[in-house]
Length: 111
Length: 110
Image (tube, rainbow over all chains, first blue to last red; front, top):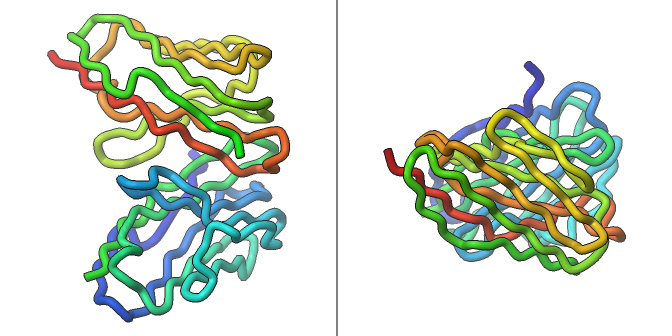
């Protein structure tokens, strides 16, 4: 049963620390997305990759967030330095053609 | 950008009841998906339905793209149907970016 996996599932850290979230897309999918879910903003897109190339990261705060795909089986989202307002659930999704499938999310709490 | 509106915002049902959730969108779409976010926070794919009608067990969905709306039908609801139902679309000029509605919170009582 193919699915998107994400690690860690939960992360509690202190303000100023670096946070790295990882995603393994479904094998064969050529698009990868990072979304963030908060109570106030709902679900919003942070970054988008097609064939490992970043196509859009306009949703990310550039000074502290970075997203990469070192290879086709791994996508990473880093926050450095983290701030309390970054507390949210971060979802990775992958897709082939148009339909997207979501991972279980990483619940991040920044104290 | 494209706007997505879902109604009703909240819905409370008794087990066994039927319901209809609505999603309106402001522009043409290349993709429309319905998701169920369960109480554990997982987003479960229900339907990929940019147009037409699909059925999966007790759930069915219809998208009328020319009139810019989609409907999700839940029949004989069960307590496990509780959660938040999201409609999400990819606008005609938005490559793969999904824009989500605010969701419908469904509570099914036994």
